[in-house]
Image 1 (cartoon, rainbow, N blue to C red):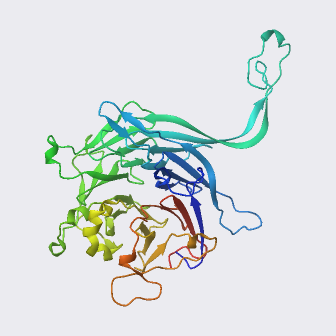
Image 2 (cartoon, rainbow, N blue to C red):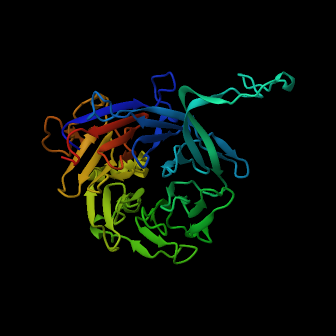
Image 3 (cartoon, rainbow, N blue to C red):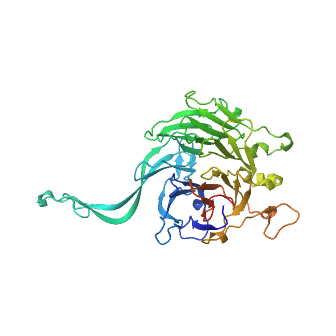
Length: 447
């Protein structure tokens, strides 16, 4: 990002009067809509908070609008599956915006089992002058109605209404890890550990199973699906990643059940780096198509990789996120951090990529200049117009003044969820229960 960065921190626990972080307040997903004017976050308590970007003011026509709370609603509640004696968490796993078709906005939200379609609309006028109802909305005695009047719309304070439109349930046996809206704007898919389903947005009682990797005998299970996404332009193409580090590109025109992929992207393992943890750290936690649709971005535990759709044998680019943790994999395995699922994001021009790390650090890589930077989402950097200073982690040897030792990293502070504005240099970073919004005031490219 640029030298002069405007920053804001939004505390996600603003709805509750306490100073400590509860599990319910931890942000679990972040997603901009297609214009970038709305930003939705979901948390472990099942709530969705939507932020709206304020328009530029006449006094400051060149100033970027800030994001303020637009609407908050409870999307999911805790449930209990009596057949399997399982508790179903209310935690929001993913949020996906639908392309806007009219004045209202729509989004999909999902927990482990149930996907919901929500409509977000505004109302700033109310009808007055009913013939058969009084001002309180009660029916009048018809004997008292002696004349007819034409109802009129009168202005009222703006009210944002959120209403559930459809509930897509009973489609998954295992935990839903991904949802992706198709470019045809009519269908979407949802993926769990072993299956991917295709849904029509207007039909809730059935879905079509397009991928099923469940073996006849579960003891033969060798990998699970970790993420899935539709191609941004071709409605027949989608990709899914696995815990073995492979990507499978599928074409729905080839067959109804896409168990046979049309392309397999896999990087041969370097025998010299083989260790007990190799399989765990090679698991892909996130996959994202570039805006152009030509490339795919994947994140595993230690690296982010850019793949060309036309080259299956190896990634086009590999970037080390925190290679200094390679010597600490044993302790990271013991405290379960090695199973953390980091996300990744493209900027609007596909020239810079971003992903999270520990100690509230996040990393950005410029694909053109090959330069990278480590930045920190912290309370110190949350003041407006604060300048983000690059951070550096050192491994032994001499330390510079502002360097932080790899032994001093806080592994409880982790940036798992990030999002990039679709056209501008604005990023959203979820750090525990805090949402940080950083925007570049000077340049459109990372410096």
